[in-house]
Length: 409
Image (cartoon, rainbow, N blue to C red; front, side, top):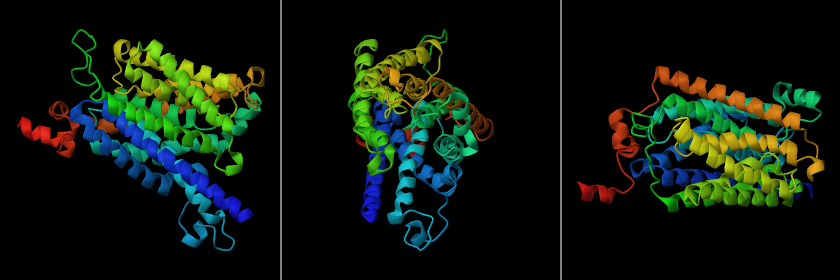
């Protein structure tokens, strides 16, 4: 029975890893549908190469920083078959690494949407290696492995540890606030604003691709959230239903606040899911619905403020979506997770506020430092000519629709 339980956990976590891996296709198509046609190939290539670089960085460096575990031993030991092995049997620790890797790789996937259409290719890959290999694991280990006594300090101060079940802060807020530093360091796209500061509209290139990206992310998100339990015995339908309620709450409020705009509607679903990650295992479904609804409104407001008021050219709105909504979700866990509001309890508003703000400060500093240094050393932005031609042709030497390009020439 013990062997069967372990094998079940391996299969469970493996399926979760595969579902979150599929979410990276969602990131890719969401970006493909939002950027102009001349940058669609670049969006696809960036996401898959970022995942490859993330895997290498996390395997050799990042996972060890976060959890103190490395893989520099023989395969029998890694799979738990060698006598006295510190690794769990049936290769559980290996699939756990795979699962957590897909979370880590979401950091550059998030950033990719913000810096689209004008970022140089190889400097971004270098940033990915630094962020996934060093920056992200530092905060991940603090929250999910109590590194540096972070959780002990939070619990001693506020009476409860910082609760982030599936990464509203650890993954989404960290990714979103790093992206803010990247976007500001990179600057706005040429032609985005008039000389007087007026906004020039750049419509999405393909609404069906945008919608497909959103749907793929939504489906994969149930692996992201539910399978964060990391064991069959830890499964709870509460996480699934809370994720569902937050998703639909985000859709409906984004529909109203965004005045039927399809981009806002499809991103509203993601805003709700981002916000509910932290407390999906402790909230009442009604609390999750409210959390998702607030996130949908927050995303629409934040996106409009960024583009029209603050002149932050965040192409996909990743800072409002992941940064702002992730922060709101981390704090909301300390409200709707309370027993007084129908939640499971075991959380504290003070702990959630302190933990959430810690993630924001850490990520903001990391974003400005990493991209600021790269900007001043090797450069992070395409030349004016390459940006005008588009990243597809200037970097990859082929467009998304080669036959159309041949006919045009």
